[in-house]
Length: 140
Image (cartoon, rainbow, N blue to C red; front, side):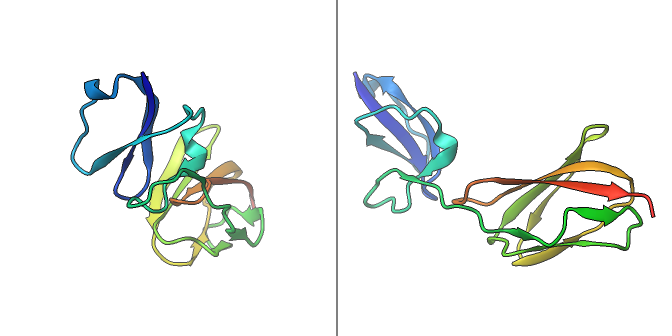
């Protein structure tokens, strides 16, 4: 029985565990790394160099939100800056579930809200740690 990690060409860790390695079947563009331990939370780790694989912690996210309160008028906006390339932004509210999920490519973007309420904003961009903000949209 050996401990292992399966990762892809981006360095994303897809799974890990412990078994007879000969029983594993790898999908296309995935790789196997034998490890001294089984990792408990893969969401916080990645492999930056797939040719010399080493498991490291994901990078801290340095996204800046200029304010956490906005008017729910579709005009007032919140500025997101320092966004990593290909950031996935998910906005949800307790009443409506997921409001929007969008892939952002620029280092700066803007958000407006039409409905009042408290929103959760989660930004995920590999290999950074996900970051979460709470935004309050109030009636003008």
